[in-house]
Length: 199
Image 1 (cartoon, rainbow, N blue to C red):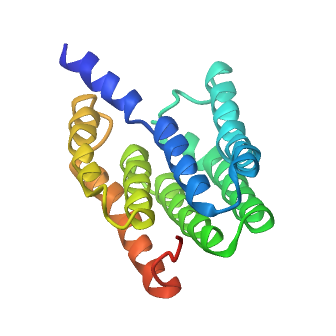
Image 2 (cartoon, rainbow, N blue to C red):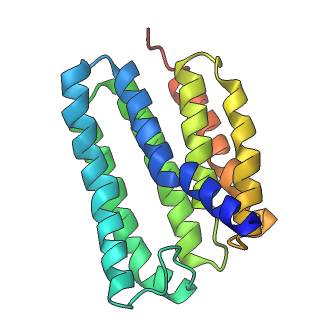
């Protein structure tokens, strides 16, 4: 029962639903208009998330990768740097071409967070929690854009921590790093770029 509940929490509060929420938030606050937001963020999602996820699924299906969680460090070292470079470069280029300055800065920060996470994940025997990184990014973005009105969202980090630990996917250090890394980069970005000035 505990395993099933942990699995359910991992999916409901997993990277894919939260990334969708993250993009929706950015689209709503970007000021580029509803219809443009629909195709711009759909394109960004397909290129930066859909394609890497499809490649990962194909690698699992052909047994070149053990599982979708990238449990094997040698497999991560072999495939992840190329996948990460593609996703991050695509995110930066599309954001720069298609959306405005403030949102571009946010996309740049998210790119740095993703790149840092994947490099740590790929190169060292330290599987930083992607669930925690994406959740922290999403909750921080929502609170930055909506002036800390949704600070309670950070309470959702606790069930995610419990779920990932129950499923034995991460150590406490890897879960903590998944919170600290995006928070540190995001705070540094606020200092460099200033607080997002979006009406």
